[in-house]
Every structure is written in C-alpha cells, then in structure tokens.
Image 1 (cartoon, rainbow, N blue to C red):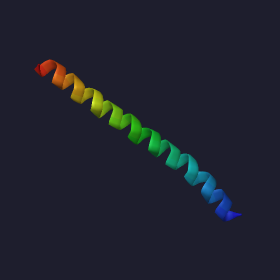
Image 2: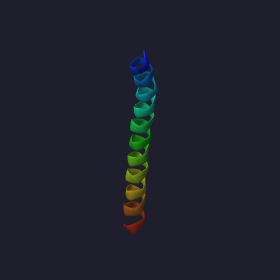
Image 3: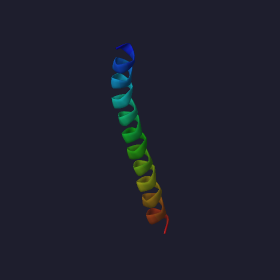
Length: 40
C-alpha cells in the first residue's frame, strides 16, 4: 500500500522534472541560436 502511494507520488514528479529539463534545454538552445543570429 505504501509502495503504491510512493510510486504514485514519484511518477508525476519525474514527469514534471523531465518536462522542466526539456523546456530548459529548449530555452538554452533558443538563446544560443539568438546569440549566433546577433553575432552574424
């Protein structure tokens, strides 16, 4: 019972973390592209 509850809590957490890191990488990529565009 406790294990089920733990996995239920951990799964959404990992999903949010994954989504956050993905959007973070996208932001970094966009910033890099913007910098290159400004430099050229």
